[in-house]
Image 1 (cartoon, rainbow, N blue to C red):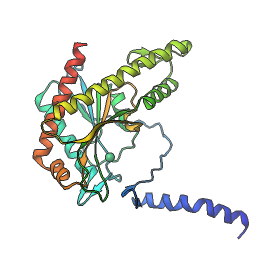
Image 2 (image 1 turned 90 degrees about the vertical axis):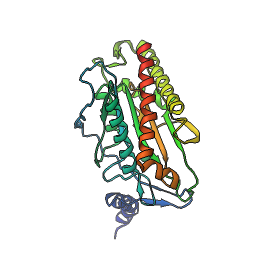
Image 3 (image 1 turned 135 degrees about the vertical axis):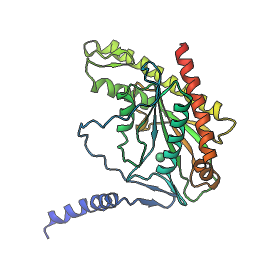
Image 4 (image 1 turned 180 degrees about the vertical axis):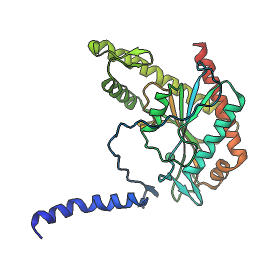
Length: 289
Ligand SMILES: [Zn+2]
């Protein structure tokens, strides 16, 4: 074997190994962190738009639209603990919330997935954008590996830095035919444009934070929150620059009490009630502004 061949093998072996594991849906255990990490290979954007989901609720298009995103799905199971698998737990919560919102009326609702479908991460906020949604909620469940005592729900909003980045990228990507929160992105006047994008972005962030506060307030009586319930992070699923968005970590499926609650009819109903109250109050305040 030539030296060149040997070098290529050394370079390619880990890639092939990881690619192979990924292809078979296996994950790499990381012993000290106690969780499994999926190595994700992001395929280049094919520019093929995903089919938009059906919008339920009133026909009236002036009614606010919330897009509910059940995390993971299909060949991406998400976290697991005991017999619980995140993709199933969160779909149950998403469906319960959808049903509650539709039942109480007045709000339009769409789900990024309502079955065991695989969706690329970036498609999820993109669906919210293309539907011109007013609010985006991505529902997840956490795992703490061997430490089963960790429990409680938390709410993530996009970190400020990541939010500015997302806005900048959006402004770069879109041309003058587009607008962000009603701000027409005009390449000719870059400086003014940057300020307007920044301002509108700040408003989206404020709205996301307000919604996160409402979830904590309305869930206070029935949902058990993590001691640090509100966090911010650079999460790709929250990067829809013009749609206020939160990622709701509903609890730890590695904690028996959390897992039980999140998968029981009563627990799902409590979640759906608290969350739908938070959504309604949020929209009512938006309408007042
Ligand atoms: Zn998740």
